[in-house]
Image (cartoon, rainbow, N blue to C red; front, top):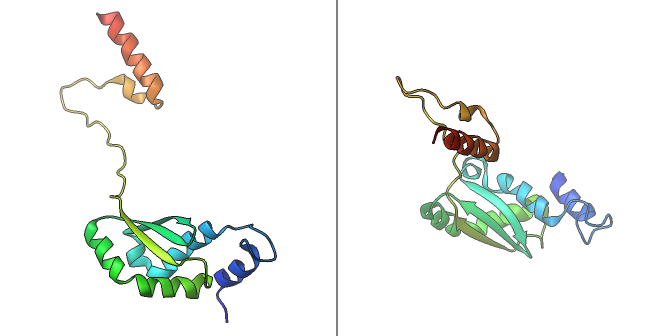
Length: 136
C-alpha cells in the first residue's frame, strides 16, 4: 500500500493533474518528522524547500554534524514518504531554539509595576513615558 503523502505528491503538487494545491514546500516540511523520527524531530525543524534543497534548522553544531553523516538515509526516507524528485539535497543550519520572553519576577518589599498589566508593548512604553514625565 502506498503512503498517502506519495499519492498527494503525485496528484496535487505542481506537475500533477491537480495543479499546485499543496505545494512541494509544505509537503516536504510535513514529511520531515516521518523521515527522521520523533526523537530527531524534537531537535530539528524543517523550514523551507529551495528548489530541491530542504533547509533544516538544528539546535547545535554537534547535531548538524551527526545529521550530515545520516543525510543519505534521511533522503531515502523522504523519497519513500513523498516520492522521488521533490527533495534532492539537505542543508542543515545551526539555529538555537527560540526562548519564550521572560517575565519580571516580583521581589518581596518592592512595589509591583502596574504597567506590566498592559499587554501591548507599545502602549506599555507610552504609559511608562507619560508616568515618568508626570513625576519629573
